[in-house]
Image (cartoon, rainbow, N blue to C red; front, side):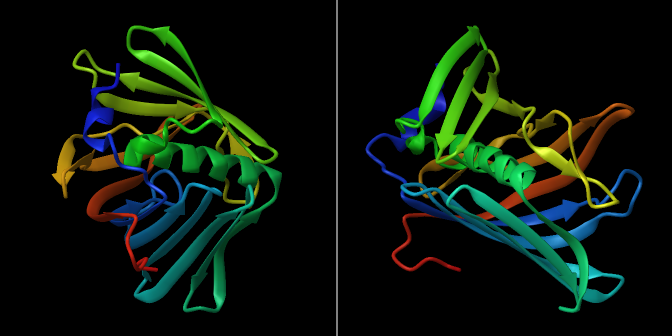
Length: 221
C-alpha cells in the first residue's frame, strides 16, 4: 500500500541523524520561537536524543529530550540557568515512545519490518500500527492519500505539556506538507505537530527538514 517504502529496500536503518529549522509555540496565541534542532535515533535498542537551541527575548535557549530504555525526560533552559520546561515520568515515557514511532514512519520506513510492530488495515487509506518497546505499548494511525503517499500520523497517547507543568491527553498529529529527495531517500519537506484541543487545533511546531543522514559512520551529535 505504501509506495514510499520502495526507495528504502535493501537499506537497514540502525541510526539516523536529522536537522530541522523549526518554529515552536509554547501556548496558543504566543509568538513563535525560531529554533535549530538536531536529533539522533537508534532503532535496534530504541533511543532518541533531540537537541534544540535558539533564543527567547534575546537570551540563549537550549533544550534536550532523552529517550532510552523506554524512559524519557525533557529539560529546556534559558541562559543555561532558568528552567523553561521540564518533564519526566510515565506520561512522558509513553509520549516519547509515540514520537519514536512517528520518526520510524516518517524518517526511517525501512525500520517498519521490526518484529515489535503489528499492523491492521482499517480502510483503503488508513493503517493502524501497534508498537511495543520494553514496558511501553503505543498505537497510532497512518493516513494515506489516493496515490499511496503518507499524509498524516495520529495518536491519542502523546500527552501535551500544560502551562502549570501537568500533562494532558489530546489527539496528536503530524500532517506532512510535501516530500523531497535527499541522497536518494524521499523524506518529508515539512511537518507540523498539532494537538486537537477542545477549543480547536493547536499547531505548536513546524519543522522544515535541513539535513539527513542514515547510518552515519560518525554520528553528528
